[in-house]
Length: 571
Ligand code: 9MR
Image (tube, rainbow, N blue to C red):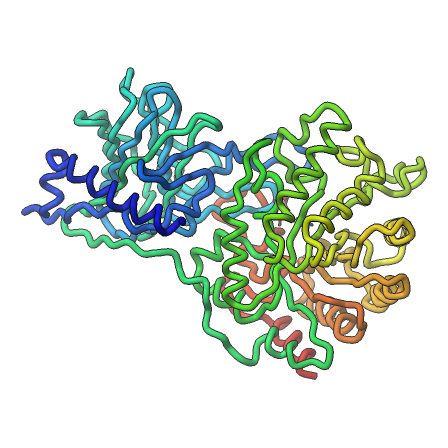
């Protein structure tokens, strides 16, 4: 279906281009100043996997998703517009122009976004890459320039007035300026601030939720002898390599998953990241792409595109997907937090779980059904909440502990073959969190809730977070005694001042030992694998800070802890 739609759109686009011969005459033939012919960025290119976009004979329909990334407490909301990571990328070094014909923008707002790399999402933050957004807003042309040093645009300019319903915009990017043209008129310039000189341009489309517009054509032209070509997104299939973590673990008497969190941005734009992920890991956990604020941004709008890209990659490389996460008090779209009555909250949760677990049925092997249900407030361990988080948790507030039962039974009905987990942090050591978690697991089992296991996140963010492998082993065994599996779900170990990599080696290998030796341990999983994109190295900083918590460094070279893990699996 999709392929067919694309092909017919391709012919529609060429008709459109023929219709615009006068406008493009010089470029179409090439010219004496060394300008190339115009290259079509729609025909034969993949726009069908861009979130919010719909490919048809008319062009590309764009419905703004209103995606935002909220703070942990649910406040704020940084814009997170979609990027066509699975689509064309322009390779160009030097001056070039991009021309877009946008229809339907007389009555709504529409934007074309050019990025010089994929945005990186860290903790509750999207690092905005250098880029240019070009669009029509309130019948005027609006241009924004991000320079890669701030979340907010360095330059915002509005031009013209009373634009008609169909507008052809051109941005001509040279070293120092970007010249803006609408229909046949020059509007002015904005400073280029060194953006779009990485050699790659990725595209995104955005608009207002519920008021779609249509991209009719999109072309690029190299100027002054510059070389320009279009590349497709990389193939998801990566060549198999022996002697890696995953192949070595596969040879164990009782194989288990070697897991990592994975992010669609780097996966589709960073070859070494992609190759390392495919060759070293047998299980992936979507770091963010399956969270409600990413795939369910509006009550009636789901956008599975980035999540589906992770699944395609996993399928192509024989990797299992541990899906994360259905019911959590964080990473919620604003509308989910604004629900007023317990009935509305319950309905939203059930619909969400049904739709998302239903969509991925047969494509994922496991789910984190409920994430982090335990409280950080001492009071919740004594006030009758049995250690369950109440504050900022709309699910608990509406339904009490029963929300957990309901989430699991609904997920089980939606995907009966998936193993269902409850995932928690800070329960590796003895103490009230572990006791509350065990008691909860026992109550769920006693009530016949279809729970298969517990994920222990194993985040170690500070020197004081180091945990004892033997204590953790007791917890894993205790779960076995009540018929539950256990997994190490999100391990990372941030080194503090003066700590050597040996600290990491001890922590990681200690937990790996437990997983190798305890029959109910199903996965040894990391929260990312490289310091280049690790989620725990800092937020809000430009340039992107790198971390030290993971087995591969920021250049994707394996560190001491990698060799130690491999050694342990061989041993
Ligand atoms: O790594 C994730 C980060 O990019 C997100 O902004 C954040 C909020 O959605 O979640 C991070 O991942 C968390 C995971 O979903 C649950 N356990 C703790 C992880 C690290 O904070």
